[in-house]
Every structure is written in C-alpha cells, then in structure tokens.
Image 1 (cartoon, rainbow, N blue to C red):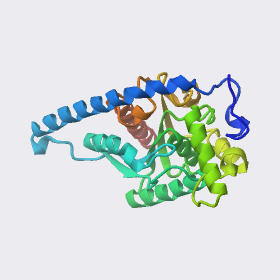
Image 2: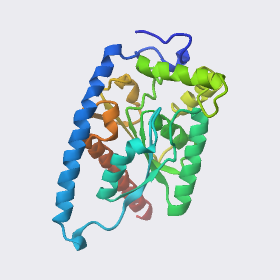
Image 3: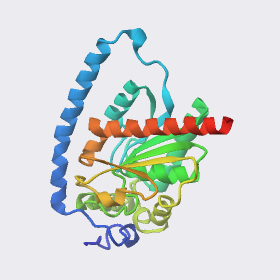
Image 4: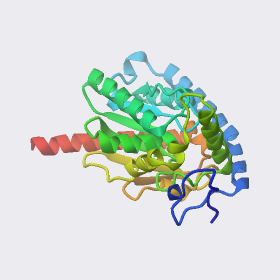
Length: 280
C-alpha cells in the first residue's frame, strides 16, 4: 500500500487497510461519458411518459423530508443539477447547498452547510435529508453528528469517510496546489491546517463519530470508482448499496439516482413507522 508524501495529507487520513488507487485507475472514469448518455436516454423516456400522462394523474404531493444536495471536492452545486432534476420529477423537494466550489476549509464548509440546513428546516418545519457526493457526503455525516435535530437521513455517494486520504494522485496534486495558493495569500482555499493539522483531525473525527439515533444512513459505493478506494466508502454503521458507476458518474448515472431515491423513500417509510409506533 502506498502512503502519501509529506507534502500531501496527514498520515492519519490514510489508516492501515486502505490504499491510494493505482494511477491507471482513473481510466475507469472514462465510463462517465456512457453514464451521461444513459441519463439522457432515461430523461427522454421520462419526458415521453409525462406527456402521455394526464395532468390530473401526475403526482402532486411532495415525498418525505426536503433533500439538500452537497457536491464533492472541486465541484459546485451545478454538478448535481441532473440528479436534482430527476429527484424533483419523482416528487422530492430538493435544495442546493450554495457551495459554488468545494475547495475551502472543510470546517468552514461544514458551518456553511449547517446554516443552510437551519434555513431549510425553519422554512419547511421539518428535518432535512442530505445527499452528498464524495467530500459532500463526508461533510453531511459530520453535520448529522453535530446537529441531529436538523438531519433525518444522509445518503453518501463515493464518500471515503473511513480514509479520506485514499484518493487518486490527481486529487492529491489538486490539494497541494490549493495549499500553496492559500500560503501565497489567496483567500477561501484549503490551508495546510485543513489537510495536516487540527482542522483535518477535527473534520476526520466528526465524520467517524457514531450517528445519533433516528438518522438513517445509506452509503453508495462502486468497485469501479477510479478516484477513491471504494472500501473507504463503506461505513460500518450505514446501509451499504453497491452500484456500477464511475466516481464522477455517480452524480448523474440514472442507476445511482435510483439507488438514491430508494434510500430517500426508505427513510420516509421508516419515519412513518416510527410515528405510528409513538401513537400506538
């Protein structure tokens, strides 16, 4: 197993038993082109089905708790736009995280996410479900630990919570560049403390704390992931769901979207059963 160089992330972010993907693993990400094509075909079929369905027969009520979508490292809300569109068509009420580019301090990003959750929960009068891609899922898990009053369910996609450092060398290079730019005075970027110091240790610790009771958790992973070690995405306290997709493709592959909507629906059913149990 190859570990990170001293110029990259802290060693504790790559625990024993996990590995940095082989450099050639990134070639598997080429299937993202097929996956976006699969989404286009599904979207076209859905449009035809909607046109053939009388307006009065279309679903009206929104399903379950509102859903907040959180993008991965180097990404913004737009990367989950296709997933948001599909979930909305199924009846879910989705929200953006307001993260334009996930390249800053993880603790600051978590605080921003918490404030966004408070706003949605106050507006809707209910807890919120979080769907997070890669780093977005790790942020979601940490916030759920701190604020179980705001979160009812988390669904992660390709999120290496058990070993954040088990990622491809291309991401390590991007992290190093952000740290250098931060050191040079560019604001709003990851600093050395975010990847090697107390900030990194706190963020990693929060993503490993036990989840409070009453929060559902589904971890979606793919053995074809060319960016992170898929084993690091299988949190032992989560319901693990395997898909066949690239790391990038998890954001729009319709098969992954089906897995996400299934996890959101399971959470809704569980909440109804709990409510019935309380009233019995």
